Image (cartoon, rainbow, N blue to C red; front, top):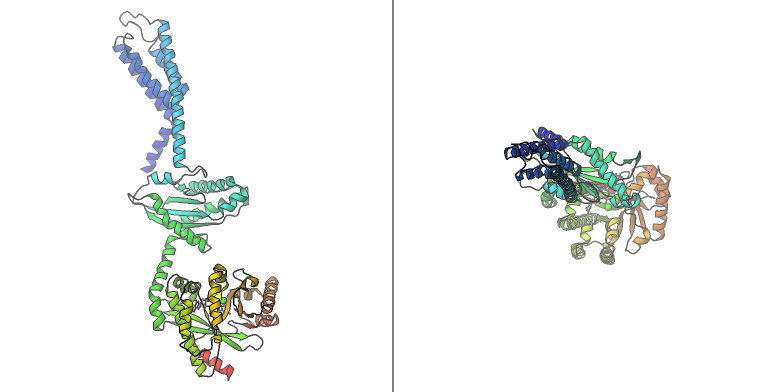
Length: 540
Ligand code: C2E
Ligand code: CA
Ligand code: CA
């Protein structure tokens, strides 16, 4: 039905000349008959001719107005006698003057009409199009009427490096890029609407048939548009998809909120696209985890495992790292990387770190009772450092135990130190003065330098396992690691390397002068009983 309506509309638009002229001739004919009926040209009925003249000129422009004016002048002129009963013709000067006036009026109304049409189309253009991108704007979307109660696929495309493209290739190149996307989409998806709510963003609305294929088409359209004259340009984009049912009274632009969220999430996760459904599933998973977390922290589902730190020369354990584990009753084993980022978004992270600290100190007390004095490190979250009370609470827990503070090491990631150096320095100075050791975790991931780290009271540098994986195959990595070890040692730091899984790497790092290491080669993180057994054998 809708297709027939669109076809009729297109036909009318294409043939507007035909039916305007038809109307003009019909009207002129009618006036002619009226004049015949009213005693020829003696009454003023000829003035009715101005109606079709003005309308035709107004719609079709000056030349059509002039032509219809002349035709009307002839019909009301030589074709219409002065006196019907006698057949006496009009004076030539009369009808020629009238015809000229009609021609002039037709021509002028044509000029005015065209001016008016141009002004209207300019206003429409400004109202419905973005003047920079030449694509439809938000205004257009808000006034658009789309069928109700059917589903739409909506996509939000964020061009993350828009500024760079404009700087390097010029604004025109960027505009033509997003116009190419719109053209590609319009070719592959009939009735799709593309708007630019803001310069670096595109919104796409498609009547939904099959979400998967629509995602594919949109992603292809964006990708294909990156090729200019056979050469690809680098475009960093993230796309969010959502599905929406359009209901009366709802602004179409509000449908894009979830697609925007999905695009932002895709960017955060370094993905080209994400659907809101996936995010919602993740959010639900996280929500369920957070609901269960506090209970699990105190009922034994969450517990600690320990991984030995090994002296590379003697291959003997010289400490442990405490790592958290969560054996969820229904979701099985949940990795720390899965739940810690969610817990970090809540105040529960303080409870978690303090509980972990207490468990570690309890374990150290049990080890001490067995004659085993072993330093243990615990991981501190970024969010802990933002808690003003953190230092006080940790010290108050520590004071419940009889452990030497130098047996406690706090691991802080390098990125935290870069994000908020002032706050970190203040807190770490306090911990260090109290006697705790401080280690920089995941060193090398954050691109800071050892010179930068010199402002913090650091004892150990833990080189990230990213380097360990590469060191045997990549000579550059070997050079970097060697330089880092040398410099760190010269600055008086203890150097530990993470993630050693084979003897060759362990031997190489020993040769490079690295003090200690952690990794599956020596031992995977294990529960307390196994670790105690392991330590007992070593220190026997
Ligand atoms: P991390 O602090 O860098 O811990 C080292 C991670 O590497 C651990 O993963 C450990 O199991 C793993 N690992 C050790 N040796 C090897 C190896 O040879 N090969 C490989 N592929 N991996 C190895 P895990 O236990 O899954 O912990 C992941 C991250 O979660 C930790 O990274 C740490 O950032 C965080 N985390 C763990 N426990 C805690 C905790 O109690 N508190 C806080 N705030 N974060 C924790
Ligand atoms: Ca760590
Ligand atoms: Ca690490």
